[in-house]
Structure formats: C-alpha cells, structure tokens
Length: 334
Length: 260
Image (cartoon, rainbow over all chains, first blue to last red; front, side):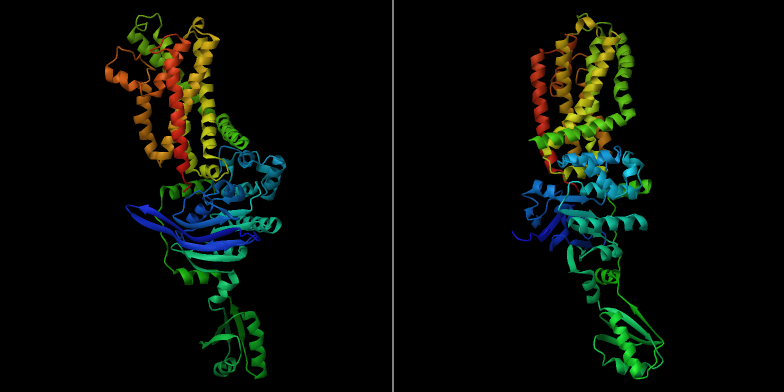
C-alpha cells in the first residue's frame, strides 16, 4: 500500500429512527483526506457534521457505506483505528474532579503510553501553556483552559489522525488564535492529518487545506478555500470615475474580466485575482487618458460562499436535553 | 492481556482518586448505616424485643450485617449508575474511544466501585465490633474473611446492576424514580431488617429468593454471627451465580452503548 490515505469515506450514510419514521442525518458522503492534510467539514447546525465525526471515531454505528482510517476499517478493525486516532469532542469530556495532570495520566494509561509517560505529559502541558495549572482540579478551569487541555490530551498517544469537533466554539478570540496555532504546529511538526468541523468561516479559511461544505447530510461543495471563493464569481473591483461610458468600452477588451456593470459612481467589475487586475486596468486607463478617482477590491469571503450555498435561513436545532446541559456547563465555567 | 489489566487498573485508579477527593461521599457512605443502626436498630430492637426468635442474638447484633449489606447495596448501585453522569458530562466518550475492550472497562468500573464499597463496609464492621454490637467472641479471622468475600460478591453484582440500569435509561430524571422503586424493595426483601425464614408469608419468602442481597446478608450472618437461613455454601453459590450473570449482562449491554 503506497501512500495510504488518512481517511477514506465511501457513501457513508446514517439514519436515525424518529417516532416510527426515519431521519437521514448523513446521506451518502464520500471524501478522502490525504496524509498531513487539514480537512474542514463546514456546515450549519444540524447538517450532520458531528454525526459524521462520531462514525469516523467508532462511537456511532453507520447505516451503510464504508470508512477507513489509515487503511483500517472502522467497524471490523475498531481497536486498531482507536489506537491511531485522537479526538477533541465538541462537548467537554474531562473528569472535572481530577486535576489536569491526572486527566492526562488517565489517558496515557488507557492508550498504553508507558515509555517517557511523565515527560510526554510535561511536553503536552507546555504546548498548551498549562504547566502552571497541572495540579489543579479541572473544575476550576475556564472553558478555554479546558479546551486547551483536551487538545493536549488528544495528542498524548501520538495519533496519526486528529479529529477536532468545533474546536473553538464559545471561546474568546485570543484563545481561538492560540488554539489555531497549536493545530497548525501539530500539523506541520508531526505531519498529523487533521479533520475539523466548524461553522466559523474564518477558522476554516485560516486552517484548512481543503473544505467540504455539508448541508442536510450531503456534501454540496468541496475544494480549497481559494478554489471555493473563486468558484463563487471571484473578486469584485469598484472603480470610481466620471468617464463611465469610455471606461466601460475600454474594459471590454481587457482579458480576465468576467462581468462589467455601470454603477452610480463608476463601474463595478468582477474577475479572478482582483489585485492583479487592478494595475492592468490602471495602466489601460492611463494610456487612454481616462481618469480614475479610486479603485477598491473586495474578495468574496468563505462566508459569502457558505451563505450562497446553504441559504440564509436560520437552522433551528431542537434543543435536546444534552444541548441544554451543554449551554449550562459552558455558561457556568466561562 | 496485560493491556486489559492496565485498562482495568486505570479505571480502578480513577475511581479511587475521585473517592479520595470527595470528602462528603466518604462521610455520607460511612455515616448513613451508623445512623440507621442508632435509630432504626435501637428503635425496632425495642419494639421487637431483645432477641431474635429463640436465639440469644440481640436485634442490634442481627441487624448489623444487614446494615453492612445496605451500605454495599447503596454505594455499589450508585457507583454503577454514575456512568450516567459520565455520559452527561462527556467523560464516557473519552473512555469509549480508547483502544481497550469493553469487558475491561466494565471490570475496571466494578473493581473500583467494589473496592470503595467494601472498604466502607469494613469500616462499619470495625465500628460495630468496637462498640460491642457484634461481640468479639463471635468473630474469627476465617469468619471475617468469608464476610469480605460476600461483600465483594454483593458489590460486584450491584455495580453491574447499576451499569445495566445506566445502559438502559437515558436521563437523570428517570433515575430517581427507578432508585425508589427498585433499590428500596431490594433492601427490604434482603432480610436486612427482619429475619426471612419460614415464619414470613410464602410470597415474601419466595420474593426474597430472587434478591441477590438476601444471599449476601445471609452469608455474612452465617460467617459473622452464626445465625442464618441457609448454610454458608448455599449463600456462596447463589452469590457467585448472581455475580457472573450480572457482569455478563452489563458487559453485553455496554458493548451496545454508543457515544451519541
């Protein structure tokens, strides 16, 4: 087997029985994550992200389809898969009564980490900057500290694939940036394959090599963040000018411009790679002695792409007792 | 194999750490039976008269093994069901995704919780012996060792039953109801508070025989105060059978638990 993929999904499907009927949470998803890649699953609430992650991490059975992690089947070779993966769950999964170090020690023991256990625990505590708090009970930790501890824990047994389910939900911008930097460091330094779910667009844009946008249990678009953005019509350049007509005719001859339209104060065009188009436009206008007052370029954000694909409706997930509890525990420890 | 033993030890260790940290649990699990002994034991003893049947055993002596059994029942059942809290607060997922067999998870939980239950029970035994409720003349090393075996068997059974309940019910709300409808009858049918021999109505006598705690307490009485319904080997065989069956059921159900 040369170059085994970190994750291989084929037509993965999960149905839940609800009041006699069935609800399809994941509707035939297929994708692969290459070794060393950071892959993002993006989607609105209730799109099926966490259900997918639960099946990938062996804690939820699938209805049909196949999942392989580093070449091992998640159903037939559960224990092997469990050894190879590290998981940071969406909900906190620490023992609040134990100290940070005891939580890490528990994990190391369960995963059979024996050699250098102490020094590995020190290392991961240092990585997430919690060494000062190592011997405090986790119930005294803030939400951000717990998250960092969970990231440290997910990495203790040197997994090959790391799963992060909404890693920065409910955290302040400072903590979020810290967590991003840990994630990229783990990816770069250890060549760790990472799959993360999020509904924060900047997060996906900042971290992911590739993204799959998922809604109603289906993948509706997949690609690099740049690719997704340019597929959405590219950059928009606004040009302020009094000589609209003249500029309009001139710009029709410039290659790379997709769409030209006149606005009240000037001209609006769209095209790929707006920052390269701008000097070309400026040069052409200069040559023809047309005056340009100003030019702005706006790149579509991933959020534009996301809203464009998934619509503007708000997704109301009916709050299960677990969500209520989640909100409660988060609120308490913030 | 050694990996499974490591896992059992790890889960056992967590139970110990949690117990040591929780002072209220230590006081609560040891204090409750002593309160029962002081109030119910003395109160009912006065009402029933000083001796049990035609024996020379006082009610307080009679009820002591019963209250040790009660301690084990409550503390083990509660420990087993505490998996529901682990599930609510997410920690169960951390255990479920670990590369260890489900049997070793169940055995680790049972080992940890039984250790705590038996330590508490022994503490009570020491106290009742020290204040003379069980006269020292009745106690022997062999008898105490036999009693400890019954304590462990009972505890393993009830932790398993707790795990089974935790696997079957999904919310904390139904837990209270269940405890009242299930644990209290188990306790009252166990002969902890009154002797269950041929002198009680047949239906009560028969019902007591499907209560695992009945055999544990009867066995402890046989080994500690030499007063029992059945010979010790009957109680022993029944206890071992219950323990094996319930561990098997708990493990089977635990394999089906999903982390969602």
